Amino acid sequence: MPDVIQLLSDHIANQIAAGEVIQRPASAVKELLENSIDAGATEIQLIIRDAGKELIQVIDNGKGMSPTDARMSFERHATSKIRNIEDLFKIRTMGFRGEALASIAAVTQVELKTRQAGSEIGTRILIEGTEVKLQEACATNPGTNISIKNLFFNVPARRHFLKSPSTEFRHILDEFTRVALAYPAIAFRLINNGTEQFHLTSGNLKQRIIGLLGNTYEKKLVPVEEKTELLNIQGFIGKPEAATRTRGMQFFFINNRFIRNAYLHHALVKAYEDLIEKESFPFYVLFLEVDPARVDVNVHPTKQEVKFEDDKMMYAYLNAAVKHALARYNIAPSLDFSLNSEIQQLSAVQMPETERQREQTQKGYLYNVFTDRNQAHVVERKDSLKAWKSLYEIAQTPIPQSPHQEEQQMQTIPSQGDMYTENSKVSDESSNMLIHGDMLVTTVKSGLMLIHIRRAQERIWYERLLQEWNSQEAPSQQILFPSSYELAPQDALLLNEVLPDLARIGFDIAPFGQYTFVVQGLPSGMPPGEEKNVIDEVIDHLKHEAPDAVSKRTELLLAHMARRLSRNKHAIMQTEGQRALIDELFACSQPEYTPGGKKVFVMIKKEMLEGMLG
Image (cartoon, rainbow, N blue to C red; front, top):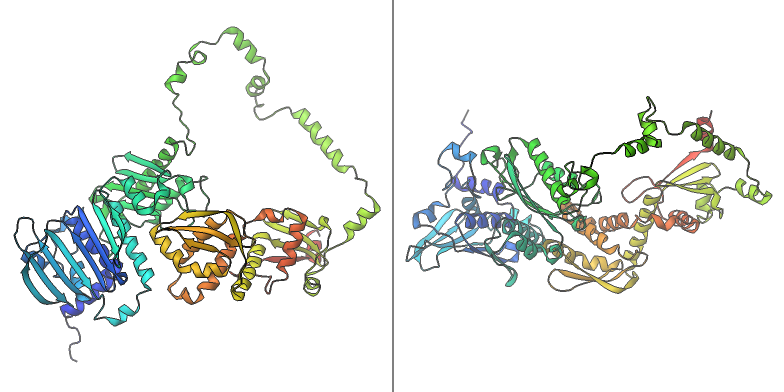
């Protein structure tokens, strides 16, 4: 039998590595920015064209490279960070694998210009698909200028799977934001298709957060700073009002490296318990500094997932630090069992108890109850029995009723089948309806019907929005005082994508500046003040929609909006609202299920009720 195992060529091996390291333009942006940071740059410029497909250029003023190092940087496993196996367990730099530039060069056309500060002349290298086309001396500024052109030019299948320019640029913004947040002392510029998106000067973390994410966070930030023997925690968390229904404004950094960790996120959310809604996400930018030997950052090609030596201890420290910060700024209640020094100086604390005070206290009711043996849990047992007896007697007394009232109580609402045939009209008698928790309980001829209020509203809203979408003539109720919302850059890009879709169902939203939008009109029937929550949830849905969901985006968008708008329980507190809910529900094409497939109502037949009662 012939041998079947053979070594891959360097060209194919590099392209396989590129699949792990360079998944999209944003991956290349991340690697290049991290290289500039490791080179000690204080100013970094990122230039993007066509969402990175045509050009990704990074210019820095770092220490640059010698001609030999410039050539070696494109070799696989070439690195200046690791000399022996022990170095893997004390990594503090960003890029250390030595695969990034080799992987980038395998699927792009690369031009590198670099010069060290002490050299009079620099080096220029041209590479296409791992093949070095040119290396020569050139005149260039100190630092490094690297351009990546025509990403995946030699792998058309992978280029075909890239998303729309707006989606790819949003991923680039995500990577740029994470790197810029981690290094507020470095000045950054981002130029997209000839337009400057960001010009961030060197400053502190708070200035960088506001510069990147918007002025809305200026008065919503709470500083966190804790130092322990295991880790140091510093950064900012948001006040409860800064919490949003969209994910993406949560940033964890371990030794200045952005990470994703659901366990640590849970610790932080737990600290906000009872301060924000369950469906909201708190804002935070937190830096955790730990001994590199206690954390392994080399467990994933993107280096965004890490393993901790003692994750339970990290959870406890982080949770306590956030709680402490919230309590310190009077955002969350805290219990302090040590008395304030000013309180200890009060005469009521310092002066001894007199005999007269002791006698008066002993005559009191509470003193006797709590000092008598086996009486601490009893409070006026005899009187309480009398009270219960009087209530029982009142309950037994029949309430006189007129013949007309008795006749009303005998009437019932038509059965489920009748509702369909009688245009979904129900009885006008309010005595046949009862709200219990999330349920509207009503009588029908065959027994009882339990309607889930929120799900019924969800079905009604969905069909209303769908009808307006299909008619393309959705009425928009204009707002007397238009409201403006400043969004994060990534969220603004998403909202721009769906503005035409929102307009078809009655929203009147217009861009106002770079990342600000003005809401001038709402779909008819939407409660004023609800628009911000709806916009937040629409953005969150778009962030996490499945890759194959674009064709069904309209249906999913309407279902998501219907779910958000169905949380108005006050609308059915009155009898008229309850009757309208039932009428509208059974006028729907599919009243039995929500757009997500959940049951809206159930029938409990009279026979079943009689069986329960024996």
